[in-house]
Amino acid sequence: MRLLVYSHDTFGLGNIKRMLAICTHLHSTIPDLSILIVSGSPMLHSFRVSPGIDYIKLPCLKRSDSGDLGVRYLDLDIEQVIRLRRELILSTVVSFRPDIVLVDKKPEGLAGEMEPSLRYIRCNLPQTRTMLVLRDILDTPESTVQTWSEHGSYKTVEWYYDEVIVLGSQRIFDVCSEYRLPEAICSKVRFFGYVARQHSSRTRGEVRKHLGIQEGERLVLVTTGGGEDGLHVLSASIEAIQQIQAYQRIRGLIVAGPELGCKQATQINMAAQACAGIEVVEFIDDMMGYIAASDLVVSMAGYNTVCELLTVGRKAIIIPRVKPVQEQKIRAERMASLSMFTTILPDVLTPGLLAEAMTRQLETDTEETYLTREIDLGALPRISDLFNEHGRIRSSHLPAVASSLSTMVSMATA
Image (tube, rainbow, N blue to C red; front, side):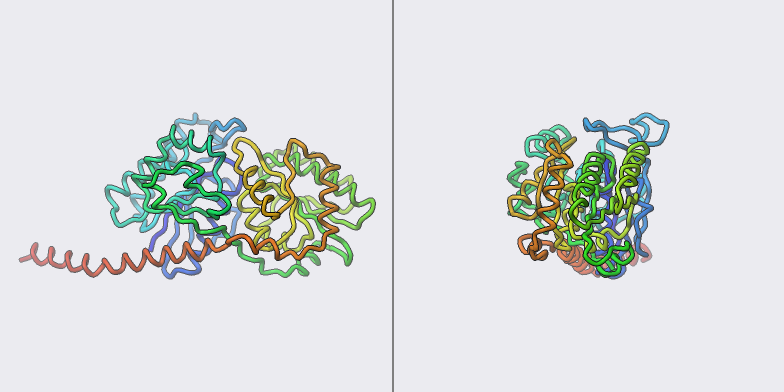
């Protein structure tokens, strides 16, 4: 079976990390599955890619704080790069001839770049199943309805997609009602739960020993994903840890992110050097191991980070991104209403407020596994079941197709 995965790439690492987690699980559970990822993520090569999974790298795009698309690296205008990406995607579909296509988040792709490929699949590959993968929350209902209406996304999903996989819980956020999906689309929607992350191969003790954490020391892990807009969280966290060190043995590990600007990275490193017991790294490929090794996590409220925290059952303070979309703010509010995490909005964030929240969390001996009791983390096995179902249906059609072809050959040679 051949799987083609489209993952857009304008901001942060979340989209590609989520789709890679799905791909890795699918490849480990479905025999003879070949997976080809199409993405412009500049960090795709930094992740571990299993045998049986490969990727085609598209030219990078970026998105400003106001939401406008731009070219990240090439000295070309945006229309040229979008046309190039669109043609690369279409040629890949034509040559690869996938059995299943997973499209991440945007039904028509960035700037409509998936539309020619979706049309080709519908007209020329009738056995191919096309599935839209949505995270739990896209943006506010008002903004999402307006965007989907302007871009024709409702019609795109109705015409071209066979299933809509929602990686979330209907109880927490019902995309059908919140985003006013018509019945023709709602009938395709399946809520699969959140994506549990694979646990690290290293134990908590091994990671803490590697970091030099001594008996009685508490470890605070600070991460903002790619880091492109994480300076305020990183700076406040360093100052907060410094304040707490006056009365508590605490160490800090700051994961700055590969997309933090050079000047900002220098600023963070200088601030950390002035404070004993704080280490700054740009990127780690074993985030699950470091989360499990920590006593407290400070992070933004991206989908992947929240799933990592829920998988491990780690206490956390989350500071959501609120622009250009409010997806993280909504997720943080819904999780806070279930007493999952402590939430601080960025417009009220100060080092003092963060230090107080850190102290409360570190002094609370709450059983960590309580976090996972209320949240469905079963998305990955359900996606595997869906693929296996499609494989069985496809296999059942092959004898009839083979018989028809044999008849046609006999007639042609008679």
